[in-house]
Amino acid sequence: MAYHPNISENDLIDNSTEGRSLGRSSSYDDVLFIMYGVIVPLVVVFGYVGNIMTAVVLRKQTMSPIAYLFLQALVLSDIFFITCAFMALSMPVLLGVWVDLDFGLNVFNTLGYTTINYLLMTSQLCNEYILVLVSIDRYVCVCHPMTHAQLFTKFRVLVSIVGVLCFSTIYNIPRIVAVKIKESPCLDSRRTCYSVYLSEIGESFLYQKMYAVWIYAVINFVIPILVLFLLNILVVRKLMRKQFKRRRLGLRKNSAKDRVTITLVLIMTIFALIQTLGFINQIHYVYMFDDSHDHTRTYLVDVVNVLYVVNSSINFIIYIAVGKTFRANFSQLIPFRCIGN
Image 1 (cartoon, helix red, strand yellow):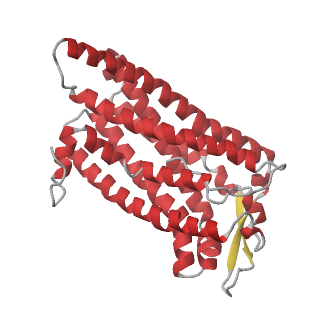
Image 2 (cartoon, one colour; image 1 turned 180 degrees about the horizontal axis):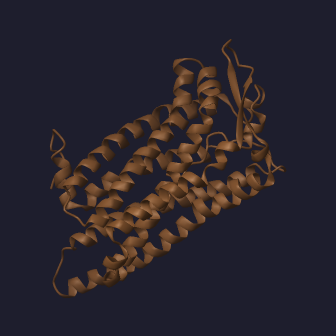
Image 3 (tube, helix red, strand yellow; image 1 turned 180 degrees about the vertical axis):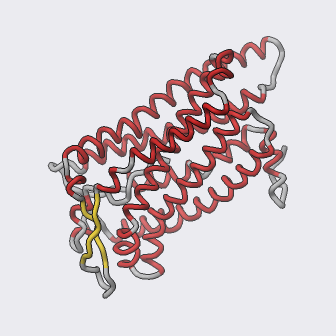
């Protein structure tokens, strides 16, 4: 879900032929191809199939309109994110192999950088804050059930989802005006190549330090992580107390509402853990690109990128594992009924 660009905006200042090899090695390129040219495309295909089938199954589910809206929004945002991630991470690598290196890295990647990066960061933020909305909804539903119906109406949920989309769209606009594209020498071909450079706005202190570092860290990491961990802990404590009471009364099965909550808590917990790793990566990113340190690239950013794509592609597995009704409906879409009820 959250994404760290494969090429940082600090790197874009030095996008000349000599600068492209900075901190790179042939072994790194091999690992990069395996991660972005093999693993990510396979995960994206898997995610497409799973998310599309999930969208179909959710239409058959008998659940509350609020839970249905949130789950559908999550599915759509996951599909949008993995599509943008594939364009940003895999397409330059694959085109570099299928066509030539210059076309993949210095034509497609650079000409499409502004648009793809903007869409990717927008889908990332939208996905994150839909999960934040879900965590607030589950907290109120479980811990304050009497007020849930009053606060979370269908209209208000739709407005909140649209509000997240609008906020994500507007918040990332500075990324469009922070860079500019110019022609540059190619590595080894005669085609016209391009490089991405920071514009005057991108070079400003307000963008470099405030927007791209501190505001980004707070909006994309600190707020979502704190909200998700805090509210999920409160929800889990409440569910454990309810489960204890059921056992005292001789009841074993969880209610349908609780199963939906458990499913969403698992999804949010996995996301929060990966997001925490992303936050660690962000701290490392700031440290690495400080003027006093060498700009040596590590595998950490690439591992985090792949984990985000995996996270947005496997949520349906959690639905299958936890939801009996979902599992039964999902199995009906598979020609070979290998998923038991």
